[in-house]
Length: 300
Length: 248
Image 1 (cartoon, helix red, strand yellow):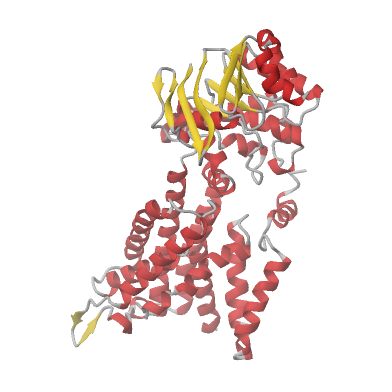
Image 2 (cartoon, helix red, strand yellow):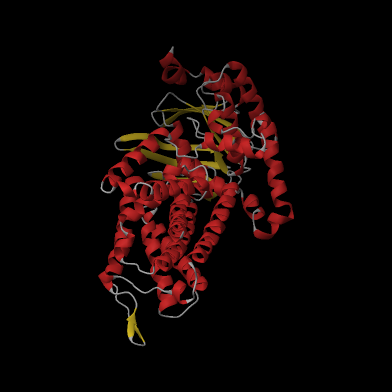
């Protein structure tokens, strides 16, 4: 049973990673920086609980803040460029963060052993959950409390004027500024919110795996971050969750028995999914029929 | 209201607009006509700050608005429509108007306290008025991309009005319309003027410009070649040879 709880934990953390990119993608910006904010959140939260002896909840708050501040700082210069240039700029940032942690040593002696990040070896013994006697099930509930809260927040954003403004910028920047929308403010704010979400996700990730290292935050993670909302569809936050379940539970775990063939089939199935549903699992049509199914027919 | 003083803009070696002077007075409707490529849309983009002029100054209500970025010019009171319609296609009609409420008054209304003190209701009322004005009330939940062409034009005009501008720049609003639709557009433009709007109308369709403009300026190769009341412009041999003559 613990295996399934562990899988649900993983799905939760990856959903946060995907949602951090979702809000940025709404403004039409493709970012490969999310793994960087995820890494910062992971190391910050880990160091606070292990080295400073904090409780995890305030540590996650600081992770969110660290992710938000970095994202805001990266957002101002990076969002001056568009399209492929932005992809390269954010990719460079993400790799820069990874290489920083590759070289980052900061250890403090705790009794017999020294704890803290050691460059390429990574940061071991992030044992907040086992030390406090949390079961896998309780950890799962804890992670999902954050996932549910953040999904609710983004769902509410989507329905608010702010959500419409994000989508307006994503559709047509010239028209958006012509109706008085400050493009820089909107894009940087989306980036900042995304950074905070990635920071929380990273902090949770560090604690349920108990061991992080630079390679846990490579380009593949950044690619997954934008792949989830794109495969799931940008019409709703639930699309991202659906895509994470599809990729992590069905593809990665479901195909594990296939051994080496898994990676091949994995790629092929994602290509197939995008071909069958080019605008994501939850495209506007799918969302419309779901609404009619559950909310009574209001649109017709 | 609007004062262009010797504005120029070149792209590469092409002088799209060269030392143009143009004044639009309070509550005036000024028509700006000229053949394709004569610099009309460039003029709109220079006024709204989509790109800066190579030289010259744009005054709005007596102030040089050169340093203001596009979204600040809208907030100062200059709204526009686009020659090729640029709606937010995946937003609903309602949302298109909602995101465009960016006048200083609207922004103050979204402040934390005033939001709960009737600010939201006032914003909704204004959207309702705009929907009624443009005859789109029954389409409020429709995605803008799914509207018919004429409805999209009407929505774009309503979206420009959502920020309660003082000056409205209409870039070929009648393009692709039949004469019945043009008639209704003319009524709307005149109604806006009654409410105190100043309008710079860029248009190819003579039927519309001649009918509503108080004054017409004619551009050719980026230069103003004539300016005056509609009757005078229609009779001017210079304009005929440059513009009307070219097509006849």
